[in-house]
Image (cartoon, rainbow, N blue to C red; front, side, top):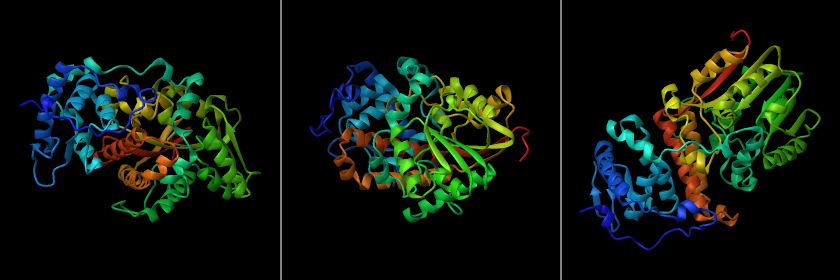
Length: 424
């Protein structure tokens, strides 16, 4: 019997159709839902998943300890996935159509070797639901501020609920293999990450440092504590306001300027440039502009230290024009580069060359696990800030989805040193 006909329970998050129109709407797509059901059966069998229907009945039992996909509303789930692919899969989670007792574990099973997830012929079905990112989200100077504000200006209080006291929103660097590092290890690991980047850029007393992407100011604070003079730029008004307060509280306003500015508008000359996980927001069409700006701003003999989320080059090419759930709901206008793309772009458009590149993917998986556990443990406090259940489920999925990417190697994170001659 088709699981499309399985009875649906009545409980679901309250979905505001004005705030979440595509989550509130279940597509009428019975034929595509039937195709999605066939793919679900195949994927569950190939990946050893346990698929549970309402009432606890198992469609697939799976092996002992198998990741669990628990369908609360099978008809809605299949119609959303059939009509929207992975975007529909994410929206279905936001709507409460499905769940898992170990969300990151389930997504890790699905993210492993994604090219084998569906049969080769089924790849043609992507044309039915894959769309290009909308022009309004392309990271032009006119659009970039709005893209950044949609994520980083949600609420400083929201980020403070799940980030460590350094307010660092990027991969930490743990002391040794990350393993199952506890929450208390996160702040020291963030400082270790920052200090290594400052060391790569040779930041010390008197260094003229440009930071592209302020975050909440921790890197600027540590650079100024070394005696550097720092200009840090951001498009997030919320981040800029808190960073300025933190810098003033530390008594370092004479060494640090926080400027609300696009990187393309910066002028001057700097001995060192550092940018932490900002290139992902630049957008592929603007990578040459971004690196050319770094080259233009770097003084002779200077060094650029980047921390960048990366993906394998072939996967980057395959997904470069795809509008994903993450782009639609979490990071509009973004594109994750490959290490090869960074090297090729700098070689073609600048005098900069990659001198070193070190990978820390497992450290990001651990960082994300700690953030996700903190976020879900503080669900009531997130709700008290005015974020509804659809939003909270969206962020839980985003954090677990990202963690799975780093667990499987689908994503990685690199610290990259760029110099004009390519020398270390």
